[in-house]
Image (cartoon, rainbow, N blue to C red; front, side, top):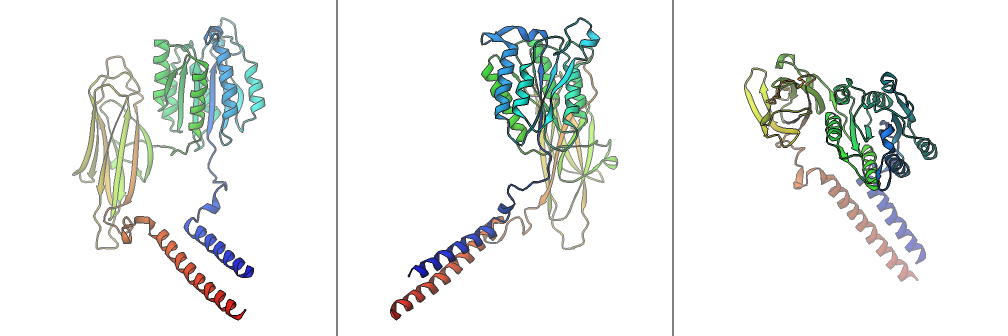
Length: 421
């Protein structure tokens, strides 16, 4: 009897392993290296003289920043490569030219040694100028140009003091490079001018601005941004739309970034095979002061200029980003060798601005293109109305059948053994 029970348990275990292996074929690969670049974060900290001010929870702004950094370093995910850059930490003199070069890499971007990083932070003392623009340029270099997630988190208590190098223009230049870098900003003082500058820097790269007045708020926000860097993201590919469909770049499914000036048209083209569906969406961000009442138009057009479908949206100045999208299913063909149709995508905006507002570089544009199976294809809805999950049902049915046959055979064998004894 014990031998029978052991045999039954072994058969059940074998069936369970077989089911797991068939139903979840990717599970065995979990934890293996994917070859993707590690997410990177560069914390850029203002260490200018104003950080001595005592107005955060009874202590100095510098003390609050140090405490927040220590807690953030403890909580940084293992997969995140983190670095620390300072601005205004080393030069206390009055020479502006020298002060505006005062940015240094306190801890290099890479695998985190928490003790070493904390020791470096502990040595900081509020000193000099506020060269935000130069620090952002250097921080972008710190992060490199690979395809991984890249994030700069800037913490400052004052505006840049190194004009005419405008940090907002610096952020726009970084965004225009198309390296998938996001800049988030945190202001330690509820100051209108500071908020305006830091908001502009963040919006230029799709980041966020937050005003913080307490140490725990600073800690929570920086932790949140570092964690966000570890989230899986799709890195946009920089492209340049044409002035007409004939000069448009050919795109495949993916996420793309471009720049578009006020009232400009940008053209792109996509090949859509019979039985496929084109899904496209576009977002245009107003990264500078614009007039209210604006819109964006996305059109799908044939190479001969006939409009197929359009999507449009209007804004009234209450939001900095406006988006729209469209879908175009290409009918199946009886000809197995039917050629793909080239669809031209036209993006037009109706933004305008007051005199004196820079028109270049253009506003950030993000275009999503996806060519998927059309609603009429067999792969879209599989047999039994179960979509792509039919194979799992098949595995479960087969497993249940095998288990029933084996259990019946074991039961008959047990009865035969009992009668023999």
